Every structure is written in structure tokens, then in C-alpha cells.
Image 1 (cartoon, rainbow, N blue to C red):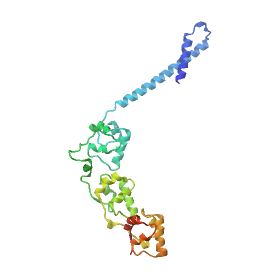
Image 2 (cartoon, helix red, strand yellow):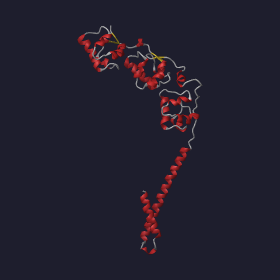
Image 3 (cartoon, rainbow, N blue to C red):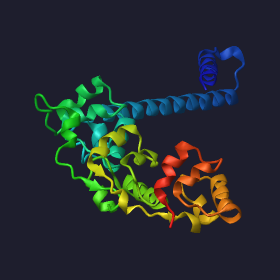
Image 4 (cartoon, rainbow, N blue to C red):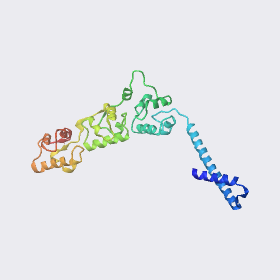
Length: 276
């Protein structure tokens, strides 16, 4: 486009300044007028684009930061306060997943917010500062209920800071697949619960192992066994073949005799079996 403009301008200047005796016909002069009009049109369009860009930049700069409560703010409000789009949507997602902020300093827990980002927005945050001598961790653990994991409903689990609707459903879904939890530590196996979230919620959970749903080992079948999260297809096949072709089990501990079940596997599965 720039080369075309240069050529048009050169031609324009030549014909305008050409002497009368150069042999330029009236038709050629009409063409010069068309060239002049084309150059003027390009200049106008370019000027319009620059003006539009300048107005857009002016509007962007004129956005005024607003005070916000990070527990209730929309992504738009967070960006108006000075956060990037990524930071704003990370905070919104954290709140929707069950997280919350009690003090201003809690926002430092968000990985994508650096110390400089925090200090730039601190004055706009509608939360208190952490009282002297108190820590972020201690502040988030106060007045939290103690929930029994095997009898809890989704609504019960939502009372715990750090558990949102998705996590609550995942905990219950995995509990159903297992037949119940024998240890709070099993929550580390739930999809969506990483080590940080586990450490945040574990103090508010207890387990009653007597409420586990157990399987009568000698009456078990291949298909029900392989659906259990702790039992592989190979292990289910070996258990059912032992019952069918060797002998019935006299105790759960006899599972250790099978080749596919080592000590670590046994320590996980024996909770879910009984022998009558």
C-alpha cells in the first residue's frame, strides 16, 4: 500500500508541474484528476483509522479503578481495579470453586498475582488487614465445622472452606465407587483435590470406618470386583478363579496368597471385604 501511494504521488507531482508543451492531452489530465482523488481518499481513510485508534486508547486510559470485595467482584470490576484478564478470571474461578478471602493479604495466595501486583491494588480491596500476630492460615481455619466424611451430604461438605460444589460432588462420587472412606487421606485420590486443597480441608473432616460398604468375598463376582477403584481386571479375574476352581476364602487375609495382590494392594482393599 505504501509503495502504491508513493507512485501515485510521484505521478501526481509530475503531471501538475509539467509544462504545457510536454504533449499532455486533456484525457491524460483527466486521469491526473482521478489519481488526485484516489490519493485524497487514502489520506482520509488513514486519518480516520488513526483517529479511531487514538479515541480507543483514550477510552482505555480513562477507566477509573474501583474499590472491590474479591469475594463478590466480577471479572470486569477486578480488571477495572488494575488486574489483568488472567488474574481477574483466576480469582473468580477460585471463588466459584469454594474459596474465599477473609483478609487483604489472602490475595497473595493466588499464584499469578505478584507482590507488586498486590501492592498496586491493595488500597482498592474492601477487606481488613490481618491482625498483628495472626497468619493467613490460622484465619482461614477459624469456626469451621467438623464433618463425618461417609455420612456427609453435598450441602454438609459445602460448609467447609475450600470445598465448592464440584469438589463436593467429586468426593461423594468417589465415596460411592469405593464403598466409603476408611481414611481422610483417601481424599488425595479424588480428582480435583491437590495437596494444597487437601491440607486446607483435612482438619475439618473425620471418618467413621464402621460405615463402610463391605463385600462378601466368597460371593463376589468378576464384574462387581473390577468396578472397584482399587481392584484391577487381572486381580478380579484371579480372585473369582480362586473361588471357583481352588477353594473359598476362609479369611480376607488369604488374599495375600494371590500373585496379583502384594502387600501395598492388600492394605488398601482389605477394608472392603468380609468372609462369613
